[in-house]
Length: 133
Image (tube, rainbow, N blue to C red; front, side):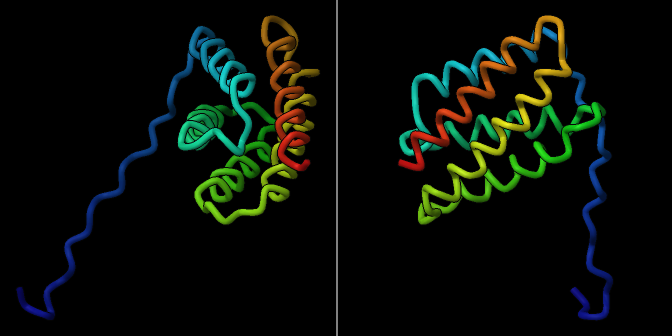
């Protein structure tokens, strides 16, 4: 290849919004609650990052207002979980903050999502408290 030739570029993948049904949202909530009940961040292993990635993908597709801070904190949590040397206190702080933000969303959600989101909030705060001990 000639050194003056243009470098081939991969075309950008178009961003297509992901449609998430109520049934899928319910299943994701159920899966996450089961995961948080069965494990703590210290023994979550790769499944913890998988849960974070699943939520990040769903929330990225949402146009609902008030999720920006949760999206940002999920990204931070993913980064922290990727590094095995991350202090437990740092993860605990993010989990507690996610719990508080989830509680706010639960209050506004109403309907079938209010109770599971409130439960998720409590589980996130509990996981943060467990980790900070």
